[in-house]
Image (cartoon, rainbow, N blue to C red; front, side):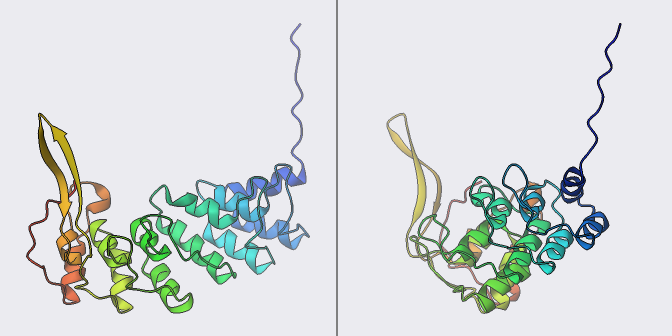
Length: 248
């Protein structure tokens, strides 16, 4: 005799969370219009804003809807993380355009961005130049959140140096449109030297005094398929003439 296991029917809470996870905008709107709390606390401690931020297909429109209905942008989930933390993921991965839009939504909702990146003494704008392909995110950080467009890290690199090195065309555009120095000079020589057979082999090197244009790299990888050099040159960028050995 075969036992038949009855499926447990989905609760209203289950349906609410599923709509949030699967980016079903109109379903989420129906739940909220029907009285669901935008700051509801699920069993694991997450609130709706965290579910959306953590979803692999997080939908900026749902985030905006939750904030419109009163979601707390700085609420912490069961692990003590905010929605910002979940989207940014501690800066350990490249962000998508949708991620950048989510961050913008959180800023519009009242979240205050960090000032530092925690890497090499850089500002948060350095981290954005490294991670986020967004003209508007850069512009908002500079114009509304007092992020210094030509801030320097410990090596004397500005955010534009970082954007140029990472071929982040969108970030470079946002920086230049907001007054970044297209020919700012780095302050320190940065390099990696490997010892081999009793001699020193320079793997890569960027000399002190390098301009953003001197830090651009060529590559066939997808993220470098755009050409940041064109954007730099359109804004008057020139080369310092230094003989750098680029990192591949």
